[in-house]
Image (cartoon, rainbow, N blue to C red; front, side, top):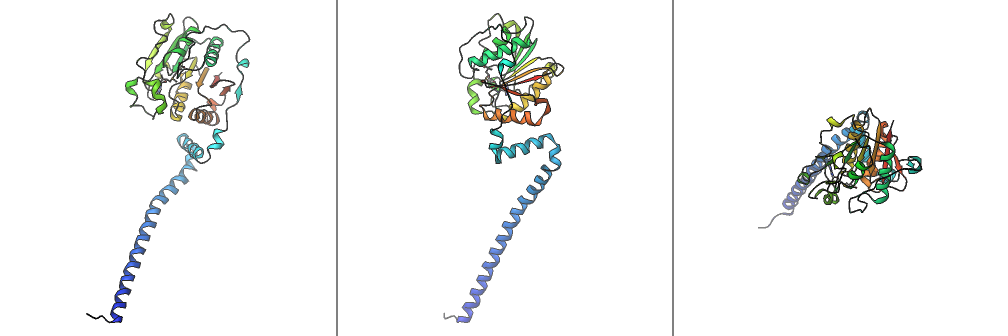
Length: 286
Ligand SMILES: C[S@@+](CC[C@H](N)C(=O)[O-])C[C@H]1O[C@@H](n2cnc3c(N)ncnc32)[C@H](O)[C@@H]1O
């Protein structure tokens, strides 16, 4: 069959028109899809950065966005420092037990500082988050008044997959031990210690609130856990007075971010100080 040139060109024109139409439709669909994401996102941002500023959880979100966009602004900032010599007198009597450190324990110098702080504070009730092998628990019991109680909370290994916030995989070693507190068990200080079990983010702290003088936070080190543990710690203090000690500041970045954030954004934590030469952050509430 011989087609006339005019016939062919009309068909080509029709095909090219159909193809143009198709591309146009595809483009409209793309723009529509983008707008479908963009409009609610812009709306949410407008809300977040205006009305949202007045809500605590949104302020935290804004802070998290900032730390993603400009991490250097926050990660280079530290809370003010304090020398241990300005916290404790020249002469302190200490009892040090189980001095040998294993992975996940605080180091020897930190153990020394911890018991110094206990000796000068003389707390009658302490709360520790994160028992592990009980080395810090034992030393807390040995350096507090005879009638003091040490509550120590640990995550049972059976609960490792069932926590409110995600855990850092590096923390699994300390969680997966068979028994919590092996180093204080069977010692003469055990009578002062009450072992508690649970996830610190869902644990019911009600019966300890307003009854504690010294809190030591060394449980999960993720950002969410440090925030949650710190806010719970404040509610534990007797008449709002006492001391809170955090481990792994400033070397663990999630702890650094959480403590920096609390110190900068919440007046209850404004007095947090980093103890020079240690990985401790310390807050005295008076
Ligand atoms: C670094 S170790 C504590 C070490 C201890 N302070 C010492 O120096 O001997 C952390 C402990 O926190 C516990 N832990 C981790 N996540 C927790 C959570 N969500 N709630 C309660 N305890 C948790 C772990 O099971 C582990 O025993």
